[in-house]
Amino acid sequence: MLAERLLEITVESLDTALAAERGGADRLELCAELVSGGVTPPVATIRKIHEEVEIPVFAIIRPRAGNFVYTDAEFAVMLRSIATVRDLALDGVALGILQEDGTVDIERTRELVEAARPLDVTFHRAFDHTPDLLRALEHVLETGATRILTSGGAAGAPEGAGVLRKLVGAAAQRITIVPGAGLHSGNIAKIAAETQAREFHSGLGTVLPYGSNNLARFESEIHTMKRCLQAHSLAS
Image 1: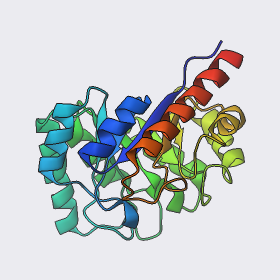
Image 2: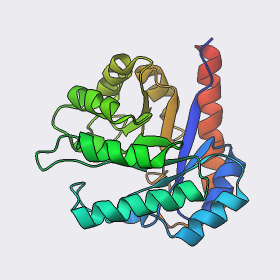
Image 3: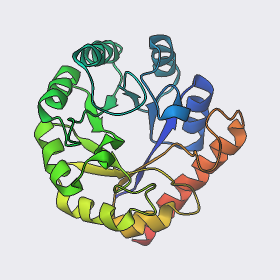
Image 4: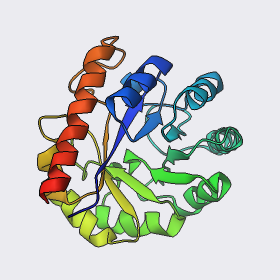
């Protein structure tokens, strides 16, 4: 029997964080401005959620929406944000920096990873903007990051399932590949079977619009997703 799968949920408020926890989420990724792809959340929000929830919390480190090529000033902001998150004793961060040609900025990403220690570091979906995902996987490994959040270069994980399986195989035990984007209770078990991944990420944007206050549906959908993953683990 395979190990139980882990479900990470993106949230942007205390209410959604608590609903995700009640629904059975294993980990939270905390962002602000999810409608624009997510940016670094305010310190007060980070602190409050960390105080109120018991499951691990990762904070996204992204100074602005848009591309992932950052100026020196923006990079300095990222370093300061990481220091804040580390001092608040969160469990991890999600970040990503690319060079002008779209490849992973190994040197500066490694600097951020080192600044974040001992926190876990996820290289987020900037990965999907690289021109060669298998090459980018090796570059992310050089940075010391512990996870890669990816849709396999597609609009969503369902469309990128074949590539995601290749990435999981290429990663082996060196780094964790986390399929994300477009996952919900109706497809997550299928994606788990197709990709053989162990961790999964969802913001539920295809089920509920970002900013929705339908917390009951949000919690119920997470509960169903988790149940689907558990059933698949038992059947594997």
